[in-house]
Image 1 (spheres, rainbow, N blue to C red):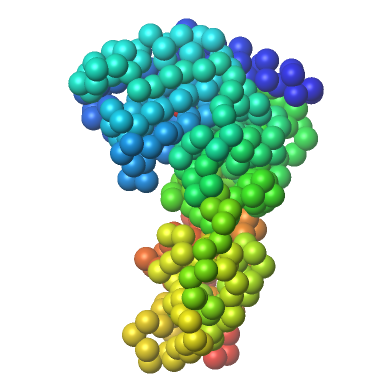
Image 2: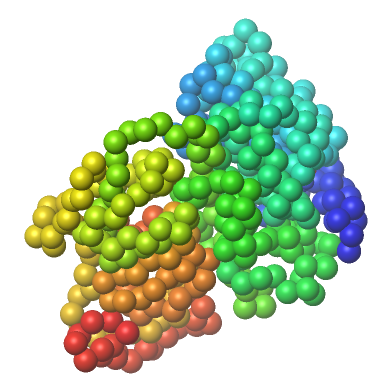
Length: 395
Ligand SMILES: C[S@@+](CC[C@H](N)C(=O)[O-])C[C@H]1O[C@@H](n2cnc3c(N)ncnc32)[C@H](O)[C@@H]1O
């Protein structure tokens, strides 16, 4: 199938959906009762997202927000409320029928919010060639769209182009745990259902890093569907276009606090917990972004940490036998590789089978935000207990 065929089929699918309001894809997680206070029903009826990228506290007053694949406009209107009347929102979409719904409801949503005029503009355009100026956007959002674009690398490069240095994205999308095979990839119907075009998580994140983004990490992930043994997830990711100029800041060392025993960041730097590591100014910029910041101590002189130090972070498994229940953990970020205290090595985007003991560790507050979980067991598991390792550690 050519890219043109896919794009046309997807656009026809969403034109039809705009007319019928048929159910496609997944629950978003938005509070519709709350949205109903200012978003017209016609918009809510054609909500086809898989997350809540505009509903997170990361949208700040006064910002310029871009929504890629804005559909009927649900995320644009929520962003409009959050940026306030001094902020601006631009939605782009390729489907005329969706644009028509969004445009006719923009003045209604603005009036419901008490704004003198709408701060939302809807433009017709492709995610692969966005009608948006270079460096003009503070925050990019998108809800279940990039999986539908046949040329995702172009989309990631366009995102990087339109963001200002220091800008960021928060995107909800469908990804898979394994590459989608050809027989699904060439199924036009499943493109429109947000399945055939889903990238494997590792490929999705690599495409973003190749475009220039860093600090990519998950806000949320939810298992969605399984087809022929392939698990599809709805994931919300955030990442940064770091400022170009690196300010001298005196910091020359970074010490990993934990909970991992060692990690590798997206610039290829490896850190061992408690051991000070010399870092350059670019790395310091990265480590100051929110997902890294609580995990590191940044210092001008080397600072070693001992396990007895209150700043040392660790979550140890219980010293009991464990059970295999079909659970797999997939590292989502912001690191490319991590190791836990039981010597499990997790690589971003690669599911690793874990036992009940490790599941408990990874579900703790310190670990949870870094992993997406999948269960591959077909039914009930009676699972006999096993002693994982002679030392009482985990398998
Ligand atoms: C699954 S719907 C999501 C719409 C909206 N974000 C929401 O949450 O309701 C996908 C939307 O993206 C648009 N779209 C898909 N691929 C696109 C592309 N390559 N460029 C621009 N728009 C695209 C479709 O027209 C459709 O309106």
